[in-house]
Image (cartoon, rainbow, N blue to C red; front, side, top):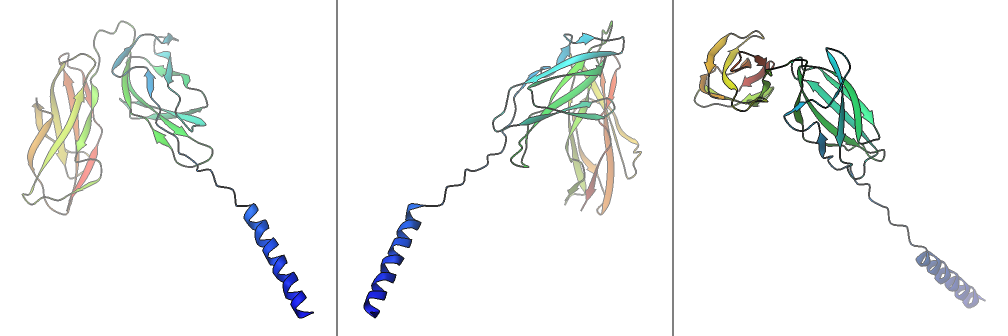
Length: 235
């Protein structure tokens, strides 16, 4: 009787194992993050003349980009380069029209989003100029601060730092010079007026001190733009 019971239990166990082997767990499909969108228009550094004129001060500009992979929606981020104000608009399409001020420089980029993951992908940023009525000159784009970047902690054995930025304008070679402001409060004085280089080397600094700085770009027509206030600390 015992032998028969052991035999039955053994058969049951083998059957159970066989059932388990015939039903393997399904493989989970990996969730892939969105890829970067490619911008189309307005083009980089374009003088935007194809928008729909709404008034003397505003026009409607159509933004377009290529679809990115694994993406359910897009955020269109537009920045007014004169005021540094930004707007964010969401869409499931690859184009969006929006009303902008005329005679104003802007930058724009796309953030690709997915409903399956919190991961996003940001495109490159392009600049363009939304032209105004009868415009004959264009304000330079605000200088892009490249070093030290905002809130960077700088180590220096020499007691000096190098300041670097990138200037750009619609008309090639129209930039004439820059004014550099630097100080220890948020209204820094000018330290290098009307310099032609896009850098200022060997600037004396003090350790354990926070510095504020900005760059004013000037073109051949006397137009100027402000980089905005940046800051860095010396270790």
